[in-house]
Length: 193
Length: 193
Image 1 (cartoon, chains in turn yellow, purple):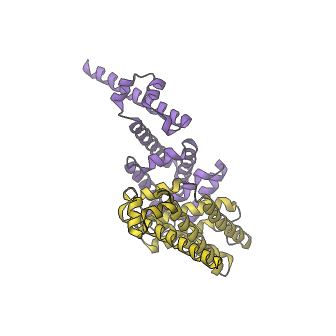
Image 2 (spheres, one colour; image 1 turned 30 degrees about the horizontal axis):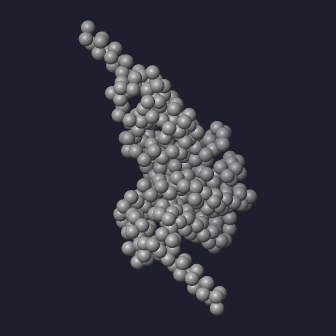
Image 3 (tube, chains in turn red, brown; image 1 turned 180 degrees about the horizontal axis):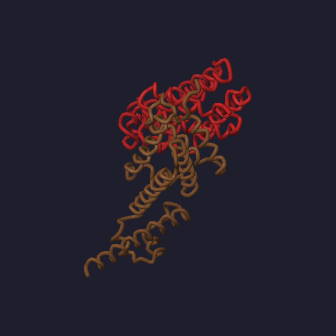
């Protein structure tokens, strides 16, 4: 039964890949970017070094794959959050709140060196654009229902939101992150006059 | 007259230093960070290579000095803008507007590579803190006069402002930068209820 065999192989490859990403992320968090090597990753995962090289050419490739998985996971989470809310205003606030929490958590985990390394890359440009589009569409919808100001283009408001909520990374507590979301959402409200 | 002599020497040194910073910044903007060398800078300024090395050990030191001068210049400009406004609300909006314009201009000038290089450094941490303090003090003052919400600490609101206005770097026009400032300021307003 070649089909089943192929499926088993595929599942095994996926498992090796996932384990490699997990182990590398943990090593970077523990020891810092520069001290992580292919040998150390092979040791940590229990995969032979030669096998590891069949999956990834170097540490950089593993980190980029890990980051892609992270960002795709965040996008998936935000999409779920969006789909669980009942109305336009609720959807927007729920998604912005979830995004702010993600921002605050990612800042805690990896040091500046890792962030600088990852954010240089174009490897997640597509997923980032999908995130922007998701927020922009919620803002468009909110402008139609009257929950969001309509004197500024949704595209510009999306930039404002993503930058403002980036401040979550330097907030001292989850309560402070929630206050940041409230302040940011206030900026989106229609003008009172 | 040794005093006059010393003053002349000092003025000359300052002029050489300034000319070096200007020439290096222009070269980086034209050719990119990696193609700029000490020889090229010496040639451009008309200073001998040996003399240049008496002022700066390498290109990195020149770029850090240039960035310090830029950031200090921005802080000086924002302080002037603050001192020209007549009331608390006006001061805050004028300073945030000027900061947003600076953000949008700096993004245009140097490429990502230069920004990544400079923002890693701790060389301007003191000046950045002064900038934060300046904004925080204006927010405190605004909270007292009723121009700014008082349900969130001025320190947190300052983080929000600086991050939100960072979006100015990706705004397509000066009009869009002004709209960004208006949206950001709306977020600072006291709650209507």
